[in-house]
Length: 123
Image (cartoon, rainbow, N blue to C red; front, side, top):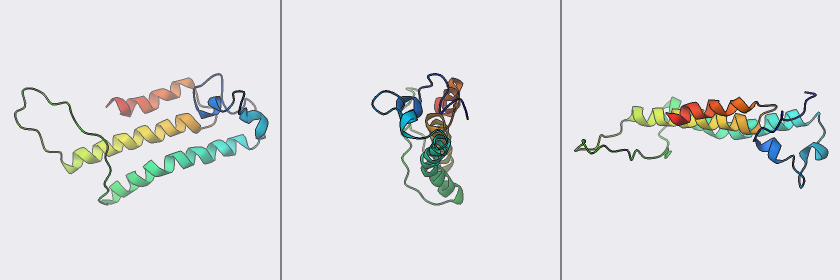
């Protein structure tokens, strides 16, 4: 914990809040910064986790996770989306949003941590 809230110049929220107008390191004691990082990380992760929990329970959630506009010219009729297609898309969205929230708000994240949200996002 002695190294501070972020290491180097990682482009996360704590780096953005450590510039001149805000300078969070001067406003909040170094003992409270890990707790602030934990609270903010949990606050950002809870909404997608709640949605994923509802989908796992089988609740009928009206969640729009994007449309599939990649239609081939060889297809004459569009394929109907099944419940499994929507569930997989919601799972990928949930994995992307929770890992991105962890990268943006957690304590002492490394630069390579951005690769974790990019993996489900690329699928």
